[in-house]
Amino acid sequence: METVLISDANIFIDLHKSDLLPFLFRLPYEIYTTDLVLNEVKSGQATLQLFLQSDDLKVLSATGEELAEMALLKRKNLSLADCSVLYFAKKNGYLLLTNEKNLRKVAKMERVKYHGILYVFELFMENNIIDLPTAISTLNKLLEINKRLPFDIFQQRIDEWRKRR
Image 1: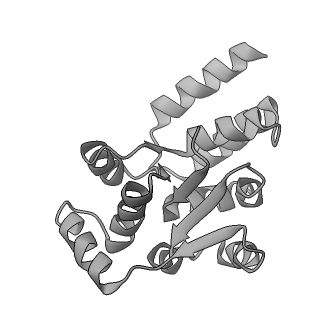
Image 2: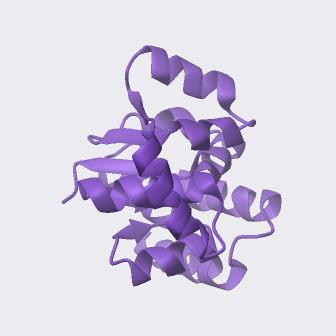
Image 3: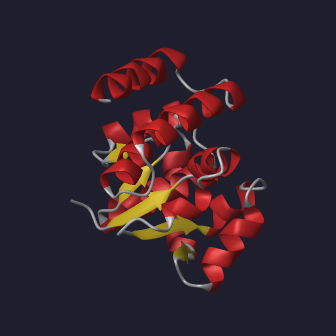
């Protein structure tokens, strides 16, 4: 199992909107992101700052040479922030956390392991950070808030979770 996770902005934003962002830092993993991603995150910025100060969230900054390498990835319809987390995930063997469809597609092509918010919820439950009813109700709340999430896939997972009860 990976010991380091690197997160894209949308994971932080979704966790903040569902009131679970602090729980991410209870997981038994090192959590990284990049300075470019932090610049994208508006929602949850104060919470992230607390975890930066406590060193629970680590931030990677690219050198000029690394930025040039990231620019090559940018040709694949990704933002520079997306390229930054993909670059460091690939370079360091980190597990990439993202819900963004284009980033996941490129990560797959680049052979970078990735997962989305559903995986994070599973980790929360496996590590007894939230219980099943909380996961279901919070995921339903998140589906109402973020219309970009794939409703059918999320609803299928919620149905699977309900059968576990």
